[in-house]
Length: 284
Image 1 (cartoon, helix red, strand yellow):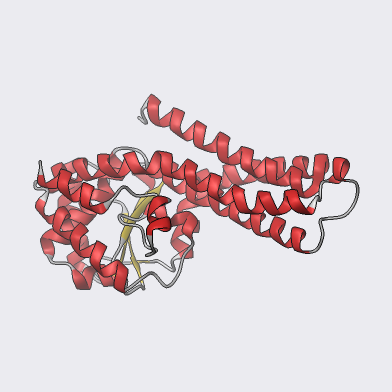
Image 2: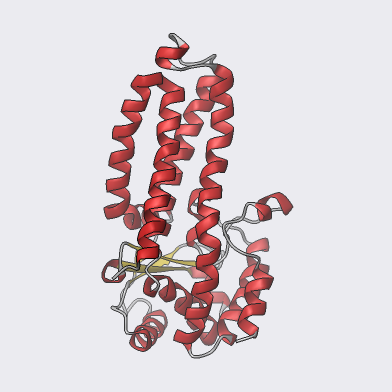
């Protein structure tokens, strides 16, 4: 059963991100916009619980693979779920040269693990095992739901923020500001700040999740060395071969941040520093 702490985290995340959607609705359309945003948020919350995994997998064009299509990958998953005492998740392959992986789903009975083609090509057996063990740790720790919900709702916040940006460019949405919203300056500020607020909410939860998944993954794999080496490779390779698809709102799902960048992007990264993760793993 999901722990009380994770229930509280999920409720907090949904509440804060839903509040951002309501705020954007109010800025775009006043009181009427809040009501429309409320209905939209309710649908998003329902949809993100039941369908967020499918949405994210489709976003990255992930394809389910059978043991006949990906025998090496399935053999690794089979070994690790036996050690962890978990149901076997669905296994997906992402057509991307950038090495990376993520887990998604609402619970261990409805989970999926997705890896890129680049990861399978760049990693040896022990390294792939370390990465998959990390993703299964997210499943075992029951935090894949909160990650998938965050990706879906943060994406909706970004979409509404873009709409607010267009509204600001065209001088507001029209009508009286107190009745229907539309102040161009408020629209512009909201469009700029709402995605940052959504990212900060994701950061607050995601960073601690990664450290816990590294520790649990090392125990599932039976050794921290494969995961530590994989993180070193992933950090170097993702700088040279960034992801070609996806959305920043989903970056917290991956084992390492899929978008490379400078100091500012690192400051707002949903992942803790790779060197610190590697140092902790080496210390186990």
